[in-house]
Image 1 (cartoon, helix red, strand yellow):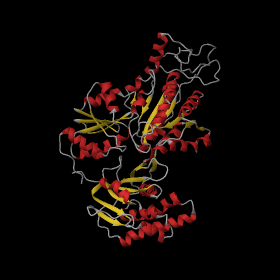
Image 2: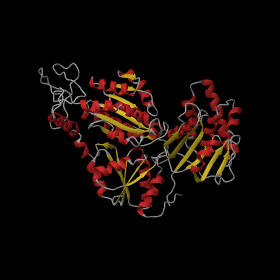
Image 3: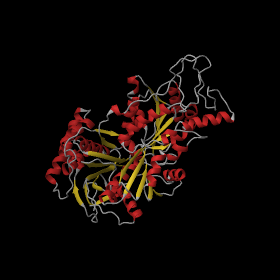
Image 4: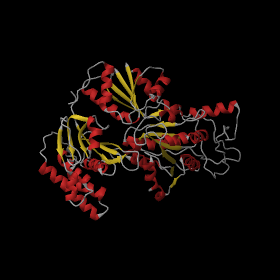
Length: 579
């Protein structure tokens, strides 16, 4: 038996009815009270209308995934019930407005009618039903009741008159839950003690990481789910001496970043899969000319416009292979909001150190989900600058692409005396002059790829968790790592020999660490959210082994139970039972 240690609450309704804000305020109240929080949301692709959902998982212990089943569902309308009732836990609680829906007789959980429309109208705020809902939820289940008015003030307090009306709605929901609901369920989540933690989304953490790394230029074009990164940097960069450009398209964005980096500024752009497709040729230019640039790919469902508001891990192939010719780059994949910060800092450092494009593979769920994280110790995140000319050179002496032991050559800034060179997309010699001979192409190809060799032997970009002597080893990357880590913990409660290796650098792969992990287990499982098993095939091609691939392509992440059930199947034991 696996004990339950958290509470999962889902708020579902229609775009524009405030249900999204209810979930956000609930998460913030829980986090401010000292609970660990992990949120997940879905929104419609349409500008107006369509179903929305925010799920809040809260615990006194760290949480790394969206949860396994919904303990509490607040259905704002009939459609919310229709869409989400199949994901309820066995002893779930349903909150509903009796004017909007009637629970079917088949529902075997606990149902509490909360007339949020009427409560809001009686409070003089007909649009305040979402705030009334917030008051009722927190009163019935905990998650930060002492912080509610502060949270409403933060989220809805810009207009003084409306703020007072929203407070009236909040108090109406609280009072109704206290006086008119007889609580018969056992769900309650209260903080064991207040803690100072950050509350951030993945996109906000990427912005913070870029600023700490010393970004000087950002260019981008709006696209879901990366636009928040552009908007966040647009509001800050010009105030601190940097520059921001909203380009006419993704090609202009990446090209202007390459130009800014050539001029000595740390530069970044952010986009999603369709934008990465447009940037392919420019990424090849940055590889050929050895110009640092950071590109965030906030993955979403594809192909083409695909699923703009759903998550997928399906851009791995284009991130690793998406360039004509032998086009090297570094690809990193964060698994959490905290990792969005430190992999962004690492991304800038790697781009500068290796003079190369660096791609950061985020995704929709990571972009918008909220997590509580410990404050960053910025002293642990030093900045690395590109190698520059330190000594004066005579006319005709400067070799921008000089072959040396590290394959990394000093990069002169424009205007450096006697150090002019052409940053061309053509093949070139050590001076940067076009050269098409077999000898020149061999030299420069081996230079561009050879500088990554130390990364293959690094152990900095993997994280191992689980049993010391496992039979089953799970190789994972990106946001699937959170559910996998939760499943590994649950497996340890059952005494199952399961371990995981999270790979944070997708290319070049940290081959020594992965090979050691593979050789330590009998069975290798590779779960990922795409149809083609892209990471599994990459592992098989490099290490020459057969793995058990486990894919899903629903537009939603794995749960811990998804992974745990697969582990039970591969180990030949009975399915897990969650209490």
